[in-house]
Length: 172
Image (cartoon, rainbow, N blue to C red; front, side, top):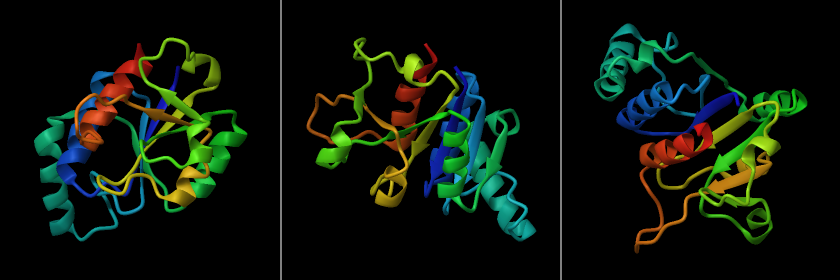
């Protein structure tokens, strides 16, 4: 199954680097940056700022930043519409869902759910901002939502940890 990972409004360069490292290790096909997520080798930045961000991302990516295919979009809604037209399933990794969204929720690890059957033409997985998650206007574009069952008192994992869990489960 082809998996494209969207990093939307991720704030931390270290989270971006860790996600790149995990994505490379699990054979993810592509990373797409959107919103204000810091990008590796962003040509829109002044050279000294690009060098600073590259250094921070590389610190946790440890070489994966040069191995995973990466692109960026300034219009995520349009990019998602194109993917949907191509038959790709759009998933969000999110745990703060409203009642209507919960109807499209899939718990990771629940073997009753055959995600590969839903994503015959590939899968896009959207990761959102570290605290606020995926914005409502982007959640509206999702076909399904993946949720990692939590057993402790905390409500969520760090975005890089959550992405590692989800990507490992999806790539099995």
